[in-house]
Image (cartoon, rainbow, N blue to C red):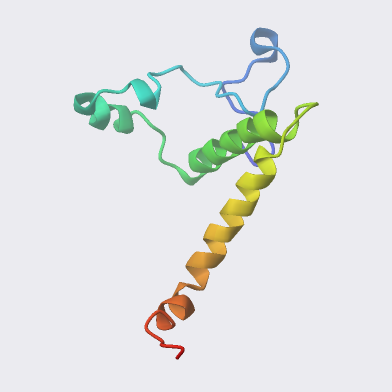
Length: 107
């Protein structure tokens, strides 16, 4: 699978129209249902390549898009997600400056 191609597991005659938010590989136990004793085995079954990580992030982004941004009557939740993510990002990049001001006395 190269950049911009369908996953190798995708078969149009079986799966129908391609959905970027769906994983077409072999189904496995969802992370929320994994027991602590089985966690190591569950992680060992994951693909750990940069391409698999990029596909994971892409699927998560498309699921978020389908749920919060693209519905006909979408609410304000997607806007708040982006706003709070930007706030957290700028807080972390400016933390050194903020930390330096916490002991100042303004009187």
